[in-house]
Image (cartoon, rainbow, N blue to C red; front, side, top):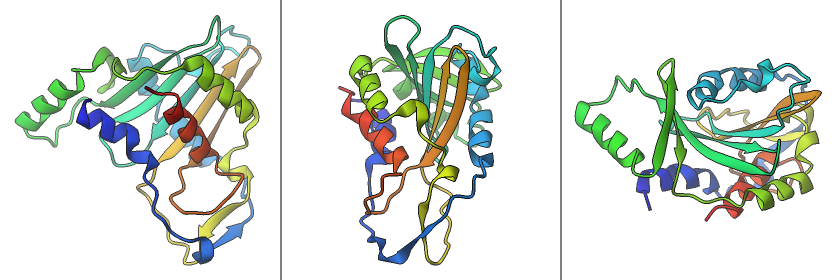
Length: 220
């Protein structure tokens, strides 16, 4: 198995065992600006993958798709999942990255490309963002979608709309994983985001964790 891709795929399941005693609950702030920003920065990746920007489609467009973006942290490789529901359930697991990588030495640059494209078919490039569809991992897209429906994926609130735990010292981590979901069907478009929480507590609002668990559960 490609070590680079395996690392990037699995990085979000590593959990730091931190008790909840140092955390407190805060009320929702209803500020969706973070989600809106994350969605906007994925535009080049969508176009590089030859996919439409979902929020730009006419509301009555017949496309029915769930797009799940995972990352927004410090890793070079980012990932997203395009689950098409317009006919039968099908999907693509796509990697994307800055094809410039100007900060890299030439040898490192070549090694990165050689390793990546052992198990990934290039889709395209847009504004120096390059995308490729993974050919190594196999997903049971139908089972995956059914479990997302059980989670009520079409109606999950944004992180800003639910109570959440924060550490008592109000320390903010800028290098975590965020899950951004876009949902499109005729007459309907919305997006929401949730961070992957690396703390141990039971919370019905840990939607980011739950979605990542479903994605990993249905990959072979």
